[in-house]
Length: 301
Image 1: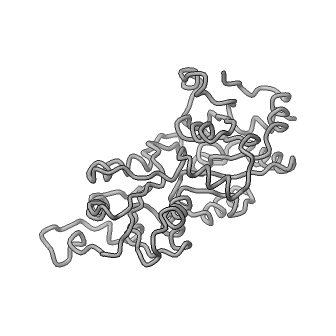
Image 2: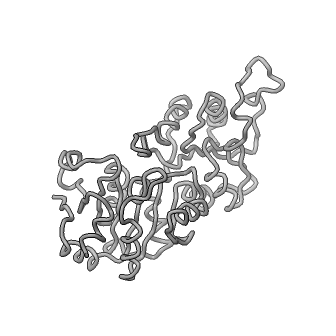
Image 3: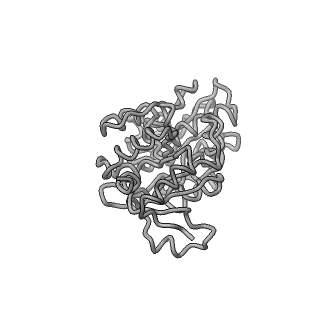
């Protein structure tokens, strides 16, 4: 049964059991542009205890370098290597797992973070932030309408959160995905995400329309995909038995940690409630839960 963290002894026990702390970002460290209470103090406390911290996010709109800058705006100093995002995971999957030749191009339905990470591993990209995607498609104009002029070198389509989603973007993705040799990759399949006190449609909600039209299921590179955990453990050389995943979602963060062999800590600053935890079978419940991440710092005082 999941244990609520409410005492100094419990926090000290957690510190003695785990050397590596994996954190989701949105809903755990911050909500929108607001840093949650005592997050900075908690991270500083963990570092002072020589704990390794890794930030694992399904937000594909930002590259790892973008995240370094976002952390910096909150006064949080992190290294690029401490960040593992779904855009980066998708780029690594295409480059190292699929081993898509570098003379192939990648068509993107998503934002700048995906482009940046794909460029860093050597791919040319199409779609993405191209402003022409905001134009209305004129299917009667066969000379200029892009759906009639596909690039034969596109070898993969990557889809992520696209807050400017429209018919043009979906139609272009569909044209490429009708080619069976074109790989279909999703940065993540979160249905929603929390921001500004609201629940907003996530990447999965954008991707579902394209997947349905194409009759194909993408490979998801974000949480809770076990491949993402394997990549993190390999690159950071962590001991899973002495690691804990901290997140705000049961179906992604907690499943990601549990399936990866890690302990789990759910914080209630995102979309979940205690009632949601209690509805789960005991083996599916997080190891621990807390009202907020900052409780780890406050309870030690």
